[in-house]
Each structure stands twice: as structure tokens, then as C-alpha cells.
Image (cartoon, rainbow, N blue to C red; front, side, top):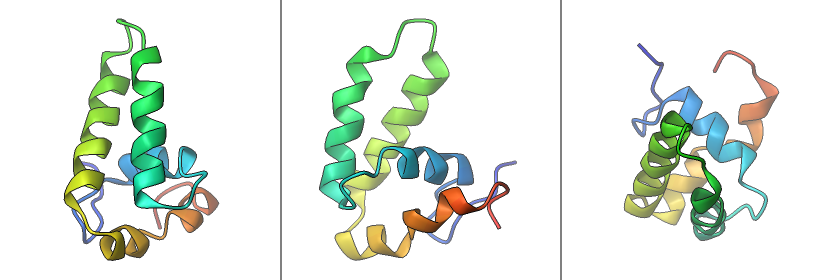
Length: 81
């Protein structure tokens, strides 16, 4: 089972969000994910599910909750710790 953050987001989801978090804002990340989503090929179903899950969670959270994810530090760790 994937390790979850306090916000209920898996490390894989956090890592994926961190990769697309160039803007550093919740809305900017949502926009980046929505922009890349149409480019996901039909054989990348898992990537589409991951993208949709991240967009859904980001849309449901507040800006303060987004900042608590601390996405800048996620890529510094390879195991979620």
C-alpha cells in the first residue's frame, strides 16, 4: 500500500505533482496538469488516472493545504521520508 500524507495524498501523487509544480501555486499546478493531460496516449491509462486524481485533489484543497504539501522538498527524497 502506498504511504499517504496527512492530506491523504500518496507519495507517488506528491512526486508527480512536484514534477509539474513549476509555478509554485496550486492553480498553476492544476493548469499545468490540465495542459499536459490531452497529450497522454491511450496506452498510458495509469498516467491518466494519476493525473486525474491529482487534479481532483488539488481542486478540492485550499491554497493553505497545498502549501502544507511542501512539494519543493519531495524530489529531494527517493522514498517519501
